[in-house]
Length: 422
Image (cartoon, rainbow, N blue to C red):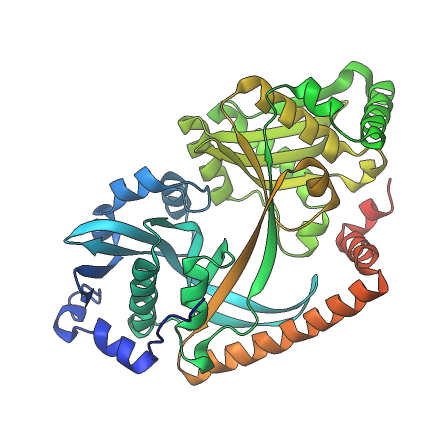
């Protein structure tokens, strides 16, 4: 594939500047033109409202869902919403959903963090590129956002989880000048499963050993807890606070919490849950053994896909595989309901995803750094830490120790008491 024409930072800055307009309340209202296409940067509630209908009509992912974003902002999310509309003859054809945040850019090596750097980042949210993703439209959006970095006072642009080889990947990876490019973009696996029309047939189609394992673990659970096995669902706004607190009691013991990731019972998360309940698209399942919370699955149903956000289980019950038991109940319910056609298991690779899923998408997260000393320094530090990670990953992979090492590291990140069991 031929490389798209590059646009250096100086020329892109010139295209996007209109000093007279930029002086109005500090907001950028300029237009970068390319033939009959134009690109508008939108900031502030009034301007963003102009593209709200387009946003709602084309949204397909929970992270960039208009109602959930609004709930997060009203709950106090420390972010400035930004939109970039590409228009043809004044009519939107592409929308980029983004936010400016004060972030800590981690220097990660595997599951560990060597340090971090504070930075002001323009994040393009996952699923936040909506509409006609032609290369022409994406290129214009890329150039316009790069030219706006100075006005937005950001050190970097982070494009979250776009399909590898897509227009967005190619544009943001190739169009910036060499010093500002992300030379070590992070590649991730995204697994999905088609919801079976017949749950019993789905189980029967599993490999024999898998079927026997599922029956054995379920039998252990039933023998130990009998009719005290309960799957609770959030179905009313009144359920939100109680279930969120129960999920938090599990989440704080997981290895994800050790990474600074996973579910957290915050005002923002509860606001999103309430919005999802009121809109009828929240999915929260909480597994209890004898009344005690032991596993959870949370997500949102958008466009016929259940986007799972957080999964977790109490490691004290590891030998009963409660997380997988709950997933099977969720799949069974989806098969019976008929509204959900696909379950998306989110970012990352795992054995259980390979066993359940029938589709995989390779995604990439790309950064573009500002042509400033700080932006170039961030690029250099981030590239160095990722180089160490990739070297270690390759060595462990060749030795056949990668999965063993991951399991040991995850267990080390769990709550110490729970990692040992009760």
